[in-house]
Structure formats: C-alpha cells, structure tokens
Image (spheres, rainbow, N blue to C red):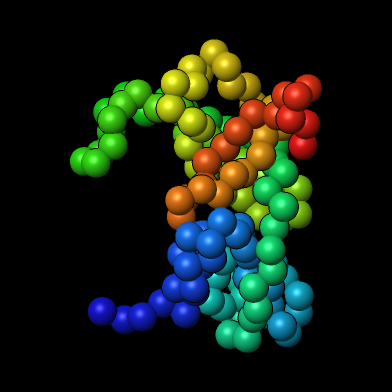
Length: 125
C-alpha cells in the first residue's frame, strides 16, 4: 500500500480539528486536503485550521446504504466560508424536510468524523 501524503488529516479529525492543506508556493487552499496543489502543482504545503461555517450547496437522502451504515440518512455538500467544498452527513434523525439548499450549517468534528449541523437562533454560525 502506498502511504498518503495527507494521511495526517485523519489524525487531525481524531483530535477534533477540521483542517485544509495550503500550498506554500502560491497560497491555494484545498478542502478536502490535497497532496499536490491543483493551481501550481507544488508538493509543498502546510495544514491550516478551518472554522467550519458553511452554506449548504446540495443534499440527498440515502435510502439504500452501503455495508456498515443504516438508511435513511441525509447527506449534504457544503461550501465552506473559508473556501473549499466537502460532503458530510447530517445527524441521525434529520429529515429531508428539515434541510434546504442555501441554509447555513456548521461542520462539526466528533470522534474522528465530521457532520453537518443546521444553524439556529440558539446556535448561530
């Protein structure tokens, strides 16, 4: 097996940190992290922490889940305020009627994974 140059991303998630890779050559930030810069092709980069505030770009409800998951569950694609796009699930029990494109969400890291939580007046982003 070939080791990944961004394998540290998993360790950062286990620590509860959401990080992107930033190119040391041109400053381009990739989320999810990439080992090589798509802008200048440099292989020199560093970790930068992200806040997790985002806007929901798209979502779907999974009705037929892969092995190890139980359906149904809602999964979304978000545009992070600090740049980058990623896909993550909403908490179990979230109905698709509770979710809408354009809503504000927070990417929350817990137990080495990230999930999406809707912003509310009690917990604004």
